[in-house]
Image 1 (tube, rainbow, N blue to C red):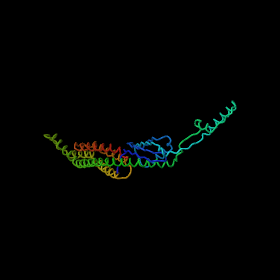
Image 2 (cartoon, rainbow, N blue to C red):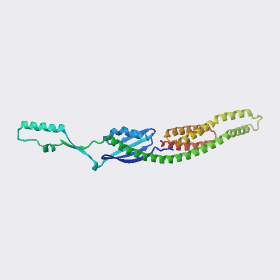
Image 3 (spheres, helix red, strand yellow):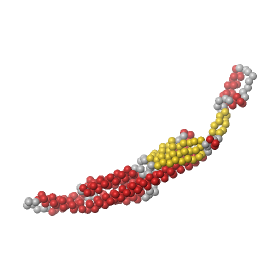
Image 4 (cartoon, rainbow, N blue to C red):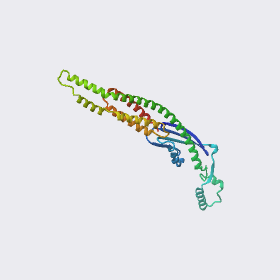
Length: 295
């Protein structure tokens, strides 16, 4: 089953006093390119995020946006003493006492009012809990992305199969026409020579006619091209039903089909076959455009 490279998913997950919001957008690209936008404080999880995404997506541009929002009633804080700063203040107080002896002492209340000596800060979060929560949000977002890619892939597959059928019908017409092209050429050649020899005492050289027809048949023979296109179509249809990324393979087969059709057009000297070649090239080009969006 085909998967499109275009998708979008969004999910949330809670971790301690935070809510992770993850948005993932996937776009067309020849190779896998993962772009991550996230708060600086969680950069150490970037390699994990890349690994989780690479396990699910093999091709395309992947844009990941991660935001965090605090949960106020779950926030936990700790109060700590900034010991180096407190010691520096105390050294200054002692020096003042030495320089200007006065009957004074430094109270706890004084220290509590000194800037940055007593620090209140959020407790350090458990990185493993954060990793598990973030993975949950990313997996949920990827599930949504996958569903969207599958839906669009089904539409692409339906359109591509219709165009493949058109190519098969045109190819059948070419095959049937090719079998009578040589005979038609022989008849036209004979008629042309007979008109030229009419009224002259020169007999028709049957051997030369046969020779010219043989040369024409060899130059215009498209049997191999037809067989190869039929083989490419069979492979193409087999790949479509595989449960794996097949975009590059389909792209290669379409290029090969286009090359064989071009060869038929170059070899053919028949207007009817040329018309079918134009039809097949048009369908192949439309399929090629669709294949560019397949994973």
